Image (cartoon, rainbow, N blue to C red):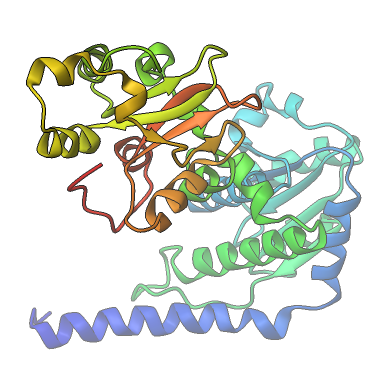
Amino acid sequence: MERTPEKILEIARGVIENEAGAVSALLSGLGDNFVRAVELILSAKGRVVLTGIGKSGHIAQKIAATLTSTGTLAAFLHPAEGFHGDLGLVSRDDVVIVLSHSGETGEIVGLLPALSYLEIPIIAVTGNPESTLARRATVHLHIGEIRESDPDNLVPTASALATLALGDALTVVLMRLKDFRKEDYAIIHPRGMLGKRLTLKVVDLLKGEATNPTAHVDDSFRKALKAITRYMLGGVSIVDDAGALVGIITDGDVRRIMEHWEGTVEELMDAPSAELMTSTPTVIDDGALARQALETMENHKPRPIFLLPIVDAKGRPVGMVHLHDLVQAGFKTSLNEVDH
């Protein structure tokens, strides 16, 4: 076969057109059986167990993972392992979705007697409505008569994609009917960006004493500087006798203080922190989300800030969150740090 750019693109376009057509053809096949399948899953007291072998097995695993991540507890059963004990993970409260394009795969058909004995509803997804699997299933979902994308109609390509699309359709319908929302998704995906935006709190970024440098209002500027230098966070919280936050001194404050100080260096070092701090600084409470801290920093007037004290209900500092902490946690910002 010629190996020209034109030929390469011609083949690729043919594959995509064929597979897009296989997925589009599912629309005309959606009907009562699809509704019955959804009702079976919704009424099941247990899990949705998916099974398939070969490429169908890979698709089954993906659908199981997608269902579980969207509020429908699901699991994958390898049919070959099912003959050797793994059928124990299936209970009478479950519903089983079986994927087999031919509907005659030996390992799949071999599981049917055991599932029937347990009286477990079976949703079959096949390309052959006259197959053994289709006839013995509680509900049959037909993906249509599909021509695979390879020249000899052998490789599960278009049929695999159509099966996956049907699984996605089931998943999204179940999400909508269960009123599964982004907040629910975030809880199941705490390390994803959506999960972080909806669940990660500012206190989750704290690392004990290292992120809570403090100095007393009567402490000298020298002592406040030592705290800033020791913890390398970029600032220090100034507290009163009750431990409540009354001010802050940041790296940026230090530069501005030294620029405008008219006395000697020794006089500056001995000056009380109360005279040099920024009073009533912008703070965030310890129940706030990390994304709220970022919004506070970005929207601060007259200029953005890069260090934000975190206080408890009594106004006592429990830590500080720096812009760097938020960036390292995966949040994106348009701020370029030039000053604190």
